[in-house]
Amino acid sequence: MKIVILPGDGIGPEISAVTIDVLQAVSRTHGLGLELLHDSAGLDSLRVHGATVTPALLEKVRGADGLVLGPMSTYEMKDEARGEVNPSKFFRKELDLYANIRPARTYPGLPNKVGEFDLVVVRENTEGFYADRNMEQGNGEMLVTKDVAISLRRITRQCCERIAESAFALARTRKQHVSIVHKANVLKIGDGMFIDACHEVAKRYPDVTVNDFIVDAMMAHVVRAPSRFDVIVTTNMFGDILSDLTSELSGSLGLGASLNAGSGFAMAQASHGSAPDIAGRDCANPSSLVLSAAMLLAWHGQRSGDQAFVTAARAIEQATTEAIACGEMTADVGGRMGTKAAGKALTARLA
Ligand code: NAD
Image (cartoon, rainbow, N blue to C red; front, side, top):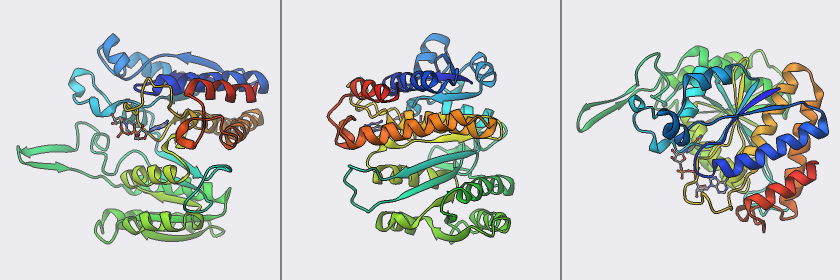
């Protein structure tokens, strides 16, 4: 399996270094034969190549079996004409990585204020309110006069159906329950279509139970009783917001793993951003990217039928859980180690 690694901006290089060590360790112990291809995207690439992502990089990624994308300082990328393209958007759009799978669960040894839970947010990744990526050409956000802005939200039945399909198929492997999250009381046409499409797909999964929640109330429900949720399916922006909440409820945004999956390619990426407030301070929690990389291995194993990849992914999850439980992790989850030391300790558990 060839995996391209792009460390990213801010804390990206710090948490990517740990992820690389962990991947190399499980490659050895589980005989995966991983080939890691190192390259750059984001502000580093902008300095060197004049663009945050280059056509050559896209070709390299297309030739690989997976991608690990570090967090990017996307807020600083203002002008595509000057090469400042959001790499996250770029790969999601170019590779049609429509399903953003964001699991969140509580961990033994971590204080939890809202009770134990284990859920997955399945977020549509290619349209919705993300006006920079929901058009074939150009950008769906415009300044009509200097005081009037319009941001377009695109919803298509096809994208609703395929994300619903991902959610129901996932629920079948878990507790067989899907919650649809929407704002159909206001966005009656777009979110109405989303709900309809989800219920259409649900007919093919009679063993999976379904309910639905309006997104604003959902924020309260998920804080009040997260244990009642299994798989949550929602549109792009709602999923982005909700999954930061569920990740923080699990203990820290630094535990927020995610996989961006399409029909033939997947990209591991932490849920959070480049965290410039803690960059270079050796205190970023590497678990988010490490667990995302584990999801990529599991995805590859399930598709290829090679069980060793699935076993390696489980070993990474288990080792991370144990490290958190005994404080061999960063301060955001009550640990006593810096990023580097936590990475070393985690890698040692997998060696
Ligand atoms: P952020 O997610 O980077 O950080 C939010 C808070 O969580 C900060 O206090 C940060 O220190 C903390 N945090 C994040 N990751 C952590 C980790 N691994 N360990 C410990 N603490 C962690 O959000 P932000 O500060 O609003 O955004 C910073 C930059 O990241 C912006 O340029 C934004 O556009 C970008 N961003 C990129 C992505 C992406 O690449 N997918 C996603 C979100 C934001």
